[in-house]
Each structure stands twice: as C-alpha cells, then as structure tokens.
Image (tube, rainbow, N blue to C red; front, side, top):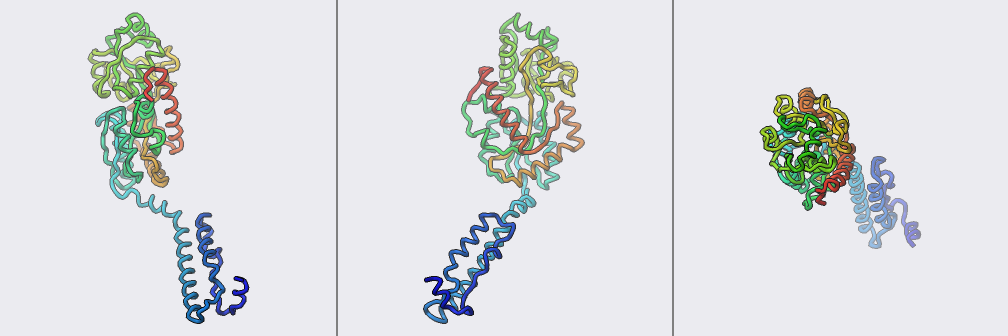
Length: 389
C-alpha cells in the first residue's frame, strides 16, 4: 500500500531526502555511517506521501523533512569531526601544571633524575611539573594515589623495579599493578651493586660467601624494609648462595648506607648512584654488580655470575606511568617529551655519572617489560620465601 500511495502523489509534491551516501563522509566510521542511514530509514516512510489534511499538511511535512535533512547533515558533519577531537586535545594538553607523585624521598639519586627530566619535559610541553614525594610501603602509598586519580594526564608517577617487587611481596594492595596503570615510557636501567664495609675480610663475592659459611648468622645486611627490592635481593642472595645472613631494616638508602659505612652492618645491595660515590671515596668496597654484563660505570666490578653466584640477575629500571585509561594522544605526547628529554646533554652526563643507561622507547615496549617483571618477581619472591601475594 505504501508503494501505491506514493505513486498517487504527483512528483512535484513529493518530499525527497538526499541519499545516505551524500550525508556520510568517506572519513566517517562504520558506526557513524550506520547511525546516519538508520535515521534516514526511520524517516523514509514520510518521503513521497501526501498528508490526508491537504495543503497545510503537505507544508508541515515538507518543513519537517527540510529540518530533518538539515539535522542529519549536521549530525554527519559532527560525526566526521569526532576522530579529530583527540588530536585537538593533544594540541591543548597540558593546560595546567602536572602533578608527579614520586614514591621515594627527596634528594636521592632517582629523585634528582626525575626532577631533571621533568624540568626538560615541562619546558617542552609548556607546563611545569610539580614533584610530590610520597615514600613508604615500598611505593604503595604513591601508587595508590595515582591509581585512583582521574586519567586526564595531570597526575602521573615514576615507577621502577620496586613496582613489581611490591606487587609480589605485599599481601594486600588497594590497586592492581597489572591493570590500574598506563605505561608511558621506560627512562633508564642500571644494576644493583653488592657492597660491604671495607674492614670486612672479604675482597670478593667468593670470600664473602666463604666467610658467611664459616660464621653463620654473624653477618648482617641492610635493606629498606618489607616489600622493597633491597630486602628481596638479600633474600635471594641468602637462598642462591646457600648462606645464613641476617637482615636489618632501614627507612631508605641514605640511612642504610650510612650504617654500612660505620660498620654497624656488614653489607647491602644498593643502586649505582648510592654505591659508586662511596666506593670511589673508599668508604665502601664494591664486590659485584647484579646485571648480566659489567657496568660501564664500574667496569672493574664483576657480575654476580662471574663471581660464582648463578641465577642472580637484578636490573633496576625506572619509567613514567599514569592511571589506567590515560588517553592515547596524551600518552603519545608524554612519551615523545620524555624521549626528547633523555637526549639532552645534561641528562646524558648525569645518567652516565650515576652508572645508569638511558633507554626510552615506546609505551608498548614499557608495558611488555612491566608484564615480564611482574611474572619474574612473583616467582623470585616465592623462591626467596618472601612472597606476599
């Protein structure tokens, strides 16, 4: 009957809607095209039909059709523009200062590096970074703040190897390390350094292990508390070398290294920025690095494997991350800015002095590293007997 009614209306009186192909841009997404075509189809039963109330009805129908056609054209245009909104947001981000929640105390080697990098990034992005130091609980306090923050690019954090270690050793966390963060880019990597008090009669890892076996339970190693990489390193050393050593908890590297220097405890595993100045000044004796290859910053120190302790490789890495759901255009903007900052001459010089290697790279590469590290440290914590999850 619809066909018959349409045929009965003179051609001059029929209201025609434009073809869907004229309202759908070639750049429109399939969903956008489907929406426009659906709207046209829902109105198609009015096209070509005459209202029963004569001329006035036809005028209202024609006016309705014109308005509908204009509205559809506007919807189609807006849908075409939607893909460009992300680009526009990236061009306007950041519009205010960016809060960087750092999970370690102010003044340490990692804190200084973050401040140097974010200074360059702030200059390049056109907005300053505000550093907020939130140490404690292996980094959990800082990470929880960021996990619960809005994914708008204005709350970020600096994660490291401590991130998967914390996930493996702290029984309860208020967030999911695998799901509640968006990796942006890795920044650096460096080994741990095994150091001892220079008065200890051990000039190599082999001599240290032999001394520990001769006097079980008499040597104590410093670490930075439960859920930290330093504590896990002591546990792995104890298990891998099959020795009986004690461990003493401190609030951070500055306190633990001071007590090793003073002889209150005999040794520790610590980062290159902490260890190398003490080694150079003769306050501590370096025995080995925990990387798979020797460190360019300390080429005279053997690896743990070279020193006779197999299956003991620890690399400290650092990088930038935000809350889960951080838009890709903002991720890309931050990623490019960090990679640019890593190439600056003062950063090159600073990382070299610290014994760190600049890495950079893509968000995907950093995400893959985090997944790998979460699995590795979960197994390592179980092996060392300190697993909490």
